[in-house]
Length: 153
Image 1 (cartoon, rainbow, N blue to C red):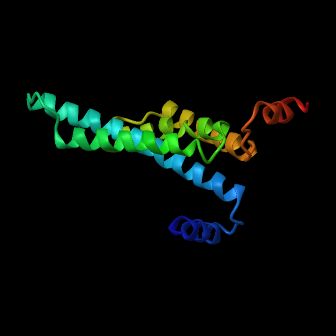
Image 2: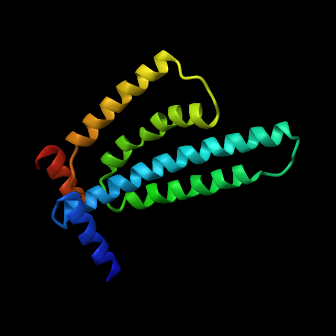
């Protein structure tokens, strides 16, 4: 009952009908949040490890544990997104991890952002938008459907 109300609310907010398109947007959102969570978690784990090394601690710090929790939640979101969205979309959105690493590494770890890295990130972002925007929004749940989609048999 609550899930139906949530789907109706999301459909209203996005301005689309409750159906396959809504499912695609849910999967896309989960994949994006999962990618961001994975990368923020990895950067927090590195920050926790660096701090623990500097303080000569043998056990993980709170920052490292928080990073691991975020990393695990991000992977769970990516795994769940596969049930909502085609793998082609999830794979393309996976490059969000590379893009977010550039941002999080400079913000969280204080690493320097160079001009070539910034330009490469822009090119990857444009390619990602093209792939996701031009890809199919429909799932292929059988070999016959996949063959019809790819080769028109």
